[in-house]
Amino acid sequence: MKETDSRTKVFNKNKYEEMVLAYYPYIDNIRVIFWDMNNLKMINDTYGHEYGDKAIERLSSVLYSFSDDRRRVYRIGGDEFIMIIDNPGEDEGKEISISAADMIEKANAGSNLKITSAVGMAKGYGRDVLEVVKRADESMYKNKVKTKAGRVG
Image (tube, rainbow, N blue to C red; front, side, top):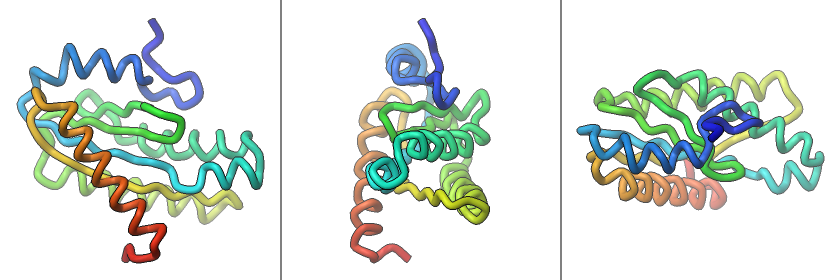
């Protein structure tokens, strides 16, 4: 069975589900970073799906640049990505999140296609991986709501 998403080259949802059952429960500590692209529907409606696909590819490329044997990136939905970090350093998730945002901003500077994403994080025990993912998703959603309301600073 294929493990990577054909468009983005990151791990796909099937691989994510496999790792949730067979790998992460045996890891002591994990940190989950959840990204959801902002305004993908608007990009698709305004510029066409080709540009929406390019936006997804750009975001995934940035996220993939941080992956290694301890940091795995998964595309779990159309414009939703998560990174699960095995036994993370204290500030590792925050540092990745900030660096990824900086890289996206730099890529936007040279392009007519501007992308942004909402980000959420959570940490916990590997045996509770689904709960940690849920908390990261909830954190991301709160940040997305704040962004839409213009209150993120």
